[in-house]
Length: 531
Image (cartoon, rainbow, N blue to C red; front, side, top):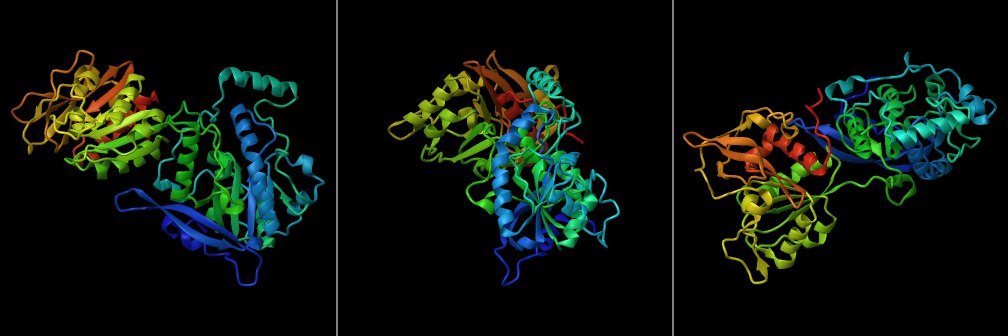
């Protein structure tokens, strides 16, 4: 049976629910994503109670050794938690299936191995259950989110070479050094051991297993594609879920989409939730909080909003989630302020730990401590991404409460701009790349010319330190710079006069914000969107 559309995933989850009088069920919250009319996906969750006796956990390829040293390190860090999950589930009556592929010889006499081998042939054995599955039809609707064509190794090259020498000295093949399952994951006699899709299917049918949880590595390869992996289980009718915090990817951040290794895992999880099956987390079984790798520290982006002209209090937070968080893997902190009251609560507290400040403000004289926090942040050479009215963010025209302060030279000193008015509203502004900078990475993937409904700001002449990237024109008026870069105290500064409400619906503006955030944080900017 082929996987049904994502909209029907929660319906599939109803099978295998616990009945009255049975032992304690697994109470899980499945997360999945459903396409909306605008092409975006919305996250939904559904609580289910699975009968433990009708549930199996498949432990995929948690090998004792791996050719990627960083992959080994992450398994070592994750395995104790994974074993706790298995112990708790086993105690509830869940069948634990250990599937360390190509490592069956050490277990040839183990009762758990014989259990899998001795399961009778299932009457409903899928014809391709012995095969690797590279894609299921539902995935044709999306774009695979990672370039893993290099194998996904993310090791330091020097460490990698040393690690391979160590593996060779142990008599292991450095490219395929696995011999058994990592021994922190305990195998009990009542479990099963197999790397065969046929054996595992037979065993599940023998035991009336309707629900399957996948844990292990690596999500974008083995967990998805093995004969006992997510795709095969989903398309053949099992209620399958990925335990998303008990897995890892083989992804090299030097490959598209040029995000951190951990964000690469998040992107694969998102793909799975859209097109393959729902996901759960380990805390739903053992309590506490979901597992997180100690190295998974996301850059923090403070988005400070205090303007009443363009409704960025409504448009900028969704962009921050869509681009900064979901796409780039950053940690956005949204601060909603009041231009009327000249306050942005919490600004002084969060800025010292910020890696990027995104500004959408207009004529706000902040409390002195908050303005000083902004100055301290910029004095430290940290990056700034500012939009639209932020050219006059701290110029309150001398009208502000006691204890507050202006920074009237912010535009000239920090942004390198010269805002002094704007052309009348009404005519659309046409935006074009500055010819000598049209190949600048900040403009990659941006198709010009494009238009904006926002009035064209008068911003010239720019400071000599500024580099104009985009120019805006409106009928019968001279062109004006509309996006540029600058430096302040050696920190990267990006400003654009774009930021009208309608701009947030323009893919060119969205790509510009994506590129600008990457540039500010020193991330690689893709040459073009992956097709």
